[in-house]
Amino acid sequence: MILEKELQTMKNNWIKNKKELELMKKSGQIAALALKKVRKNIKPGVTCKYLDDIARQEIENQGAKSSFMTVEDYKYTICTTVNEQVVHAIPTDRVLKDGDIVGIDIGALYKGYHSDLAYTQPVGKVSSETQQFLSIGESTLKAAIKKAAPGNKIGDISSVIQNSIEGAGYAVVKELTGHGVGRELHEEPYVPCFGKPNTGPIISENMTLAIEVIYTAGSGEIGLEADNWTISAADGSLGGLFEQTILITKSGPVVLTPYM
Image (cartoon, rainbow, N blue to C red; front, side, top):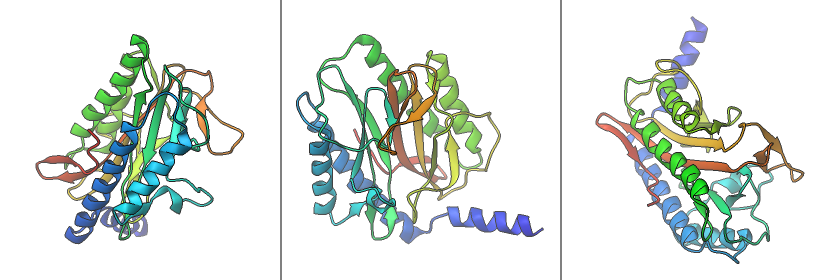
């Protein structure tokens, strides 16, 4: 019985009230605008650090702070994953080249509430195979978001991600997940990139989730680089990351971080 009460308390904490949702909507808008500004500046010859500076200035100009700077020992506004890198890459002086791909992971903290989103895009001209890899990731995220409806379960989202990515010949990264988001950058429930329909926690109205599609063009196995932050594909294959913060409503999911 104690465990049941604790579980109910946990679920209640996942639900946001009207005031909290208004702050989260604003946080999401700020992060999305910052990402749009960064994406416009992605081209051969720019450095990852330059993109980080743009993001930081844009978020501060809108009266918010970087969510990622609330993570212990992380001193940057964004993560910039290039080619085989999958998540958490530090924005260094690495120069982007024609044919690269770069993922931008970003979050804003506004009046105590976080947002989180990510987008991976080409740098200059890429091969048709690389473009297909990115297109599958983006379309998978859109399909997964549609499953985030009241009464469904987390496994319904996860299974769509796994089936779509694996069906295209790629592999999901099973060690990394999406998550709840709000007062903390990473909250429960966690949203894995693999699973079975009708399993896991029930999705409820006014929950806020950061749904992530984390995958590679190879085996899906990952490793930690020497900087102790960057996680890359162990086999050197391309890594992809697409993420949106969404709100669960009676009429379906609402994206709080529209980046297009």
